[in-house]
Structures are given as C-alpha cells and as structure tokens.
Length: 303
Image 1 (cartoon, rainbow, N blue to C red):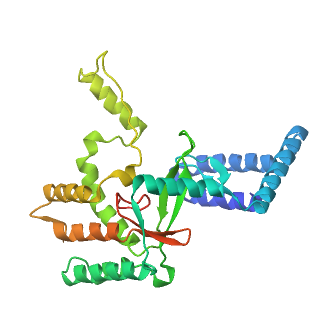
Image 2: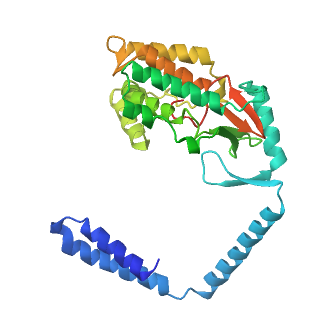
Image 3: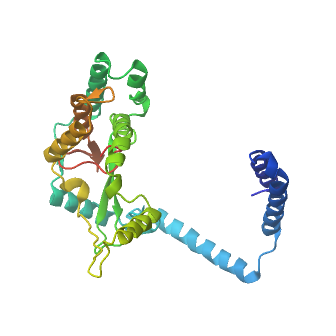
C-alpha cells in the first residue's frame, strides 16, 4: 500500500466520523498512518528475507509444475479455505462413482443442448405470471437473464478432505442458467417466512447457541443424562425424493398462507416456480449434458 493510498483511506474514514469524535479519530488515524508507513519502509530482518525468498521459490516451482502437468488439478476443499491437489483421473472417477451411487442424474441423449428449452420454459412461466397480474412487467424483465450471458450449469466436485477417501461434494455452478434469477427470487420471497417459522429450532450463530443453552439450563431441563448429538446426512442434496419434497413444500406454503395466498402468489403459482427450478436443473460435464432427477442442486438459491 502506497503512502498516497493510506492518506486517501484516512481522509475518507475521517469524513465518516461524527463531528463530536473528529479530533480524537483524526489523531488515531494519523497514528495508524505513521505505523503503516513505518512498517512499509522498514528494512526486514535477514532471516525473514531469506524465508520469503525461499517460499517464493517454492510457489514458483509449484506454478511451473502445474503448467507442465495437465493431469493435475487444484481445487478448494469443501467448507474450508484449504486447497487440494489431485489427479484429473481421480476426480473424474469419483464423479462417475457418485453419479452411479446416487442415481440422481440422467444423461440427455437426444443430442440437443437443453439451454434453449430451459429458457423457453422460464419465459413461458414468467409470461403466465405477468398475465395473471402476479408480477409486474418490471419484475418480469428482471427475472430474465441477459441472453448474451446465458449458459448451462457446470458440474464440479469439491474435495471433502475431512472425510475418509476424500469424496467429492457435487456443485452445480449455474450462475448464468435461465432459471437462476427465478430461484433467487423465490428464495428471497419465502426466506423471511421460513426463518420466522423455524426460528425456535434454528441456531443462527455461536452466540445464539450459548443463549439457548443458558435458557435450557435456567428452565431446569439440563440434566446429568442430557446428551448432545450431531448427525451428518450422506449425499443430502441428492437423497431427498423430489415428489415427496414438493408435497411437503406445498403443505408448508398452504399452512402459512392467508386465504391460499402468500403475498400476490397463490400456492399454485409458487409450486409452478418450484417445479420450473427443479425441472430445468441441467448441466454439462465432460462434454455431455445431464439432468438431475432426484433431490435438488447444490448451488441453486431456492434449493
């Protein structure tokens, strides 16, 4: 960071400080600027310089190795910032094993890219909702992605380094898929209601856990025989039967609706959007098209 950038940052920060604290904050920011300046121009000890040079050489050697070895792939691991280095063949083998085990995906064998069909399905539903005065023209246009950016989802697996055998967590990267904005819209629309309903049985963060545990104790429910149990569901996103999930979702919406509607949407409108999101969950992997027929995609806002 240059001195000019540091000074500009300090000036900007000072402008955001209330007038009553201006002198105090100005003094603090000037001290911060001086410390930053000293650290930036201070000569590093020789041992740190040698260490930095050694690590730089290691990084350059790794970069060269990766360029010269196309059969090596680097991926960020699931639920961590650690990187995993493995063989391309291993990743492909694990992906195929996962597909065979879960039976959640089928190959699209008609030779046609599903992108156009998915886009048509999205446009048809949005036209229908607008004709029913459920959404406005402005909302209709906002829920359609730019045609120049449209693309199918892409499958990639994130290594679960914390588990035996390092299985893959399947991710469908569908940020530019036709139904992506519809998925985000439905999630944003229903999330406040769901969070309110599930608040009593949901932990928001660590502090929330502590507070609920304290209440549990104060209510006299904490005993010497009390057990804390954790569970891990294997292949969560692909093990849930789709029809059962949709029926459960419909009952939830009906239970918390008012006269059969949530906002301007009837339960039927919401279910049509849910079906659309699930039915257009297609992606490309290894130059082949696939459609998910079981569970839901990990990477879609609604699911």
